[in-house]
Image 1 (tube, helix red, strand yellow):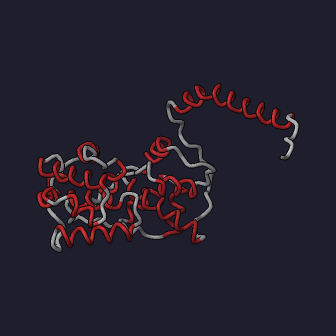
Image 2 (cartoon, one colour):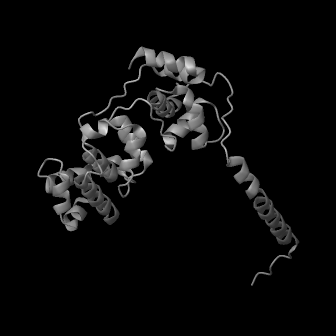
Image 3 (cartoon, helix red, strand yellow):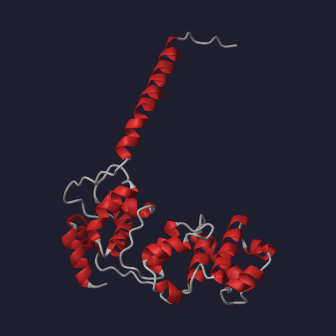
Length: 257
């Protein structure tokens, strides 16, 4: 990782800079030779599964449907659902894989060369048209397959929790507030995200530095209004709970049968 990028992040944010200093160099690498179809198919296989279980399913999938090579979209479309079920895919994932294959054949999901020429927003727009593929999945592809330098997955639990730990917050940051704060890391937000992931490990290892200062996250438009609208309902619920508690205390004990 370029020292120039790390120097930029340190100057932009003293707290993140302390995390960088404590951890050391960033060794983030991207798999630049993976086609979007294969990357997304693997992502679908890993959804809501332990990594080892997903790898076993993919191994059976490649062995039975691709004869040792990762199946092409055309081969996947021709594969009976029963064979995919035997490999370990759920019905929902089979539907997602078939949708991915169909959209790849139709050109909605482009090849790697075409995808490389699109900006991040356009890639997210096109790839999230696939069933079961959301923004987070595409952001992981942008980081780990395309090597895009300015991606901050604010919906990722590890990113948000790493930020909470590194910055000494009591509560998890809202995604919009984290996105607003992270604008100072542009155009190197991918590297900042990598260090926020590492902050979770550093906390467990006891190597995460204490925050140098107390920060205040930017206010997010609409959040205060939603809380204000919910206020009367919250007060009513609390009043009902207090009334119920008083009634329980005032009620005579039940006779045992």
